[in-house]
Length: 511
Image (tube, rainbow, N blue to C red; front, side, top):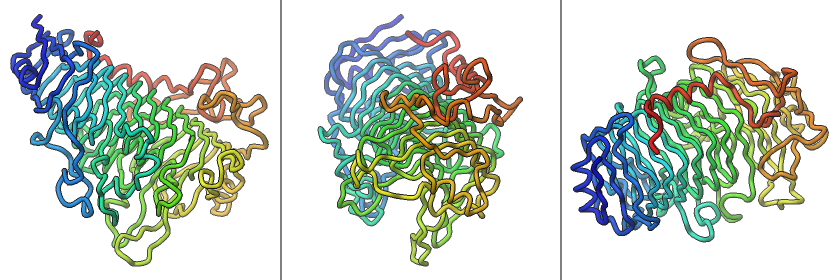
């Protein structure tokens, strides 16, 4: 097995050019201010090409953020996606069976790692700082990615400026702002046009504009094989995410988002203008410690749990695209200061105005959510707002809300007024959760969520429907994320992730 110890960009590039199956490249800390490219290199199952930390020192790209990077003016556009001409610590092009393990990398703008038309890639145990993109991947041949046990902090300012101080519009670009912080508008994992087959697990993503943002340009729900498909996102921490922790774009198929922890996030699950379906969101817990932005911010300081499609003027197909297959949001536990669904209602015939939210084929059940305490958190953090507002049920085909429990009467009255009453919904008469364990969401001793959930099945793209694991031997199910054994499980769904992990590393995960 060849081994290379590298201390500079030039040495790293030489090692990349010589790499073959079984090669191990040991990266020492220091300045790496020129991109290195691993191209047309192929490891083998059990003998991958491995990049590993040689010491505990930081690798620095030596780059500074630039609001003018990314095409157009910051006041006119969000930044474009990066290409091979843009800086990255490492660009991986047309490679297979590669492992990146244990590196500490910062000051890389726009990207830390860039991937094109590559497969069977593992990125593990890395500590990453800065960058518009921690990992950017593209190309329809890109698949079989395992991203696990990493930490990425995009904004490492001591006062968490991206969350507390920087206006959302300025970090987005355009949006009638100067866009001078648009270099944050990227993500931990951002992809464009990849096949999919992705596992993202046990990562810690904090002080970032976006978490997982994956886009495909073709919205064809019957393409075979489907693109942007078979994505498993579980057991991750999303902390102070200024826009979207989870955001598929245009089309997504067979996505599983489970057992994640969301703390201080803006729009949690973003599906505006997205078609496809077979999405499963379950066993996630979410709560807040603060409110995004500042009291003098003009907008984008409230957020929502589900960001859905909406009408615009002038009308565009991109914003009004909806799922064509079923999707499921069930057995989650949330402590909220934002609405479940919150759209605008401003079709004033002015360009860019927005109307009601809508969706299709949504099944929302067994969720448990409580509203914030204004006496404890204050009027700015806990501003009164409808649990659901400006949602167009008449335009939303095949949707179902039932078996949910919350402590807000207006949630149920809103549904009832539109003839969509929850037949088995519960208005909590006392605490749903035991607050003694912050963020863990065990049920209170006399919680109405206990053993009262719907213990049914959810549809899957193939085979028999997937059942939910019962609370205990009596076959009952709690509402909310927590069961007697831990976070709600759907064994048949989770088996898909296990099978994919075996595909990514058929000889076992690289040690």
